[in-house]
Amino acid sequence: MTNKAKVKVTLIAGGVGGAKMAEGLYHLDNVALSIIGNIADDEAFHGLWVSPDIDTLTYTLSDVIDRDQGWGVADESHRTLETLSKLGDDTWMSLGDRDFGLHICRTHRRACGDRPTLIARDIAKSFGLTCDIVLPTDDTVQTRVRSDQGWLSFQEYFVKERCAPEVRELQYENIEKAQVTNEALEALGTADLIVIAPSNPLVSILPILKVPGVLEAIKASSAPKIGVSPIINGGVVKGPADRMLASLGYDATAFGVAQIYAGFLDGFVIDHADAQHVPAMRELGLNTHLDTILMKTREDKIRLAEQLLGLSGVLDSIDLVSEGGN
Image 1 (cartoon, rainbow, N blue to C red):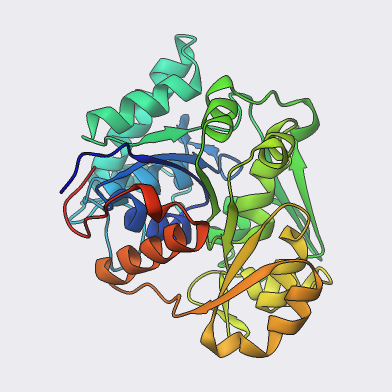
Image 2 (tube, one colour):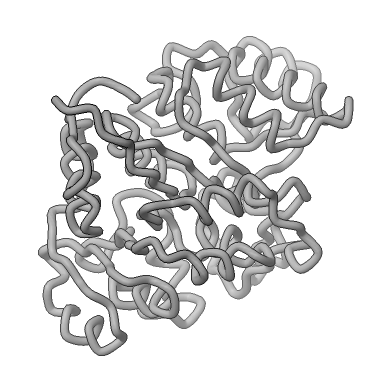
């Protein structure tokens, strides 16, 4: 294999779906991966600052994720949570013992005044990662969900209420005042390829894009910009994205997601099951590619990642290896 420069890929991602796409890109040997992760799901529990999407990315890429549930640490115990419950604390947010250790570290460093971006970077390195996990902002931005019962934090809606309430409105609290990090701007400005992961567009991707300066940097980049649909044949693999899109007036299909992204993407990858949407997507100005986008195995993730690189036209200058890590 010839020694050629790595392709710089910047992935914009939420948690479970984003982590699958991240895993595929991470295991392409000649990709230098940066991930701009969602922080609008973050919330304090038991006095500790929890960052679910960032942690899911970290746990997935370091191979300690509980793959059956898609989040948390494998072979986890919950003795801390049992004690908290015995003491009368509300324990609907399931946090494992080793997971608590990470949250303690993060919270302590935040209390010491460390930048959240640097904390996330150091945690990733401690877990052995060789990619960059980047925060879009060091400010606190939190997604709020309005249902018929009133406003809920995202975790209350997602975990405590199990996504049952009908979503009437979304609000990204404090996003107008948030300042984009230099690290996020650098990741976007130096990218050879920008990918939008198959994450929930409304609560995973838009809270990143709406941080002032992020979407502008994406549009200013000369890199190809490709998105992967989180919707397959009108449904999702996991999560409430389809119901949330429908309840907020969007078309709950791959085409509906394409409409959200059409203003800045060059291409959109959808499943073969959604071929009927191709003409409408092309009318939006999107180059549309049909593929098998359901990612069940690492091989599925790597294959789709290779396809994205091929679509972007960057394969001419690199050699790809489908096994191993960065």
